[in-house]
Length: 100
Image (tube, rainbow, N blue to C red; front, side):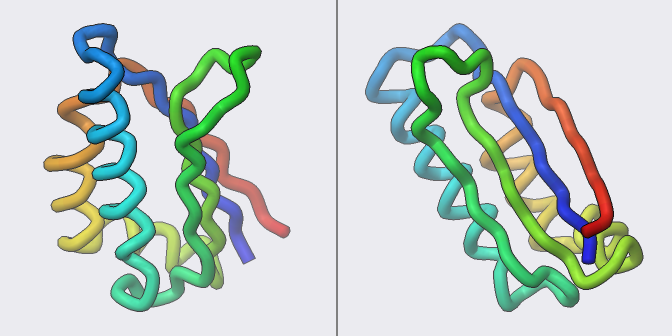
């Protein structure tokens, strides 16, 4: 099994209402990939960090294997969500993948 964790910082361009809409869109889009992408076991987007955090969102996902993670990264539905709901709004991305 492989964990895939991503932390994002949103761009500074947005107001409170826009931020909530963007976070909801990212959460809905990514969590909607469960059952669509082969080998994706679990996926959760946390949109409510504590004030002590230096990121705005976290993706916590679990894959059957490293090959399944590679397939996810190129899967058309994932690419669509990334291109429409994530990348246009994020300023930075940090990723860690590891075996469990």
